[in-house]
Amino acid sequence: MLEVIGAAPGSESTQDWPTIWNNSEEHKAVKAELARMKETLSKLPVSNHDPDSLLPFAAPFGTQLRIVLTRVFETYWRTPSYLYSKVALCLFSVSQHHELRNVSNSRQAMFIGFSFWKTANSLQGLQNQLFAVFMLLTIFSNFCQQIMPHFVSQRALYEAREQPSNTYSWKVFIMSNIIVEIPWNTLMALLIFVGWYYPIGLRQNAVEADQVAERGALMFLFILTFLIFSGTFTNMVIAGVETAETAGNLANLMFSLTLIFCG
Image 1 (cartoon, rainbow, N blue to C red):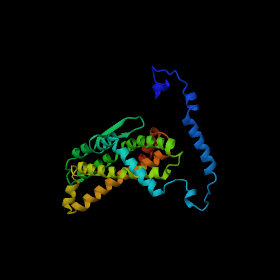
Image 2 (spheres, one colour; image 1 turned 45 degrees about the vertical axis):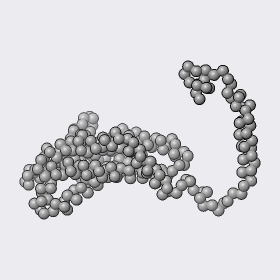
Image 3 (tube, one colour; image 1 turned 60 degrees about the vertical axis):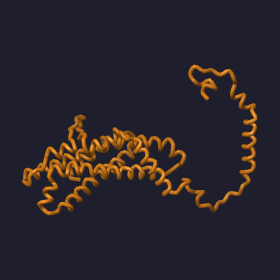
Image 4 (cartoon, rainbow, N blue to C red; image 1 turned 120 degrees about the horizontal axis):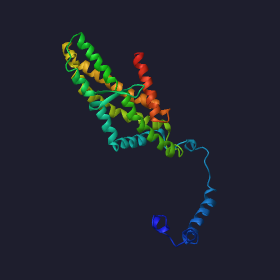
């Protein structure tokens, strides 16, 4: 089509297409149909008792959430680089604790577990295990910084396309981005649990206390809660900030305050 009208590179058109269209039978038929619709549709009765006519959106809230949530899940599935980086962060790659000078202190999830391999049931062993817990929590900042750019790109599309046309509510947009993280965070919690809980010897402590199942399940729930908290905390911060960089700095500051004041 661009080549025919002369808009493509290296092409030119010798015909005046606007004049051809204005003089065509198709143009006359379109104008006649528009005139007929203007004449007949304006005479149709309008019901003032239809409750749906006053709703801001064509679809109910449940339908909006179901369709948008499905679309966000598909978006995540079609962005394997984001999912691979999440797996690498929680299992293999480094988690970074950013200082004011932008210097990062690297830690590895499995590296933490094997650095404190089967710590002894002693005062030094307890100190090592507590330090391993603290080191694991330092994945928070990187976890947030992975989610924020993804959220910003989706928000830009929503504000430019769906919001002006009232396709769906902003509440649906926020809820979809929160819910879609929960299944993936559950999987990440399982990977962290296997690669961190057993190597540092916490299971051995449970064996000695005859509470293997209870302590293992409780620790998994602690890890899952931490990841869900990180995801929802990230959405809370980035929802009111324009750029991911600014939101990342704010999230790091607020998480540092939670460490200083013990939560």
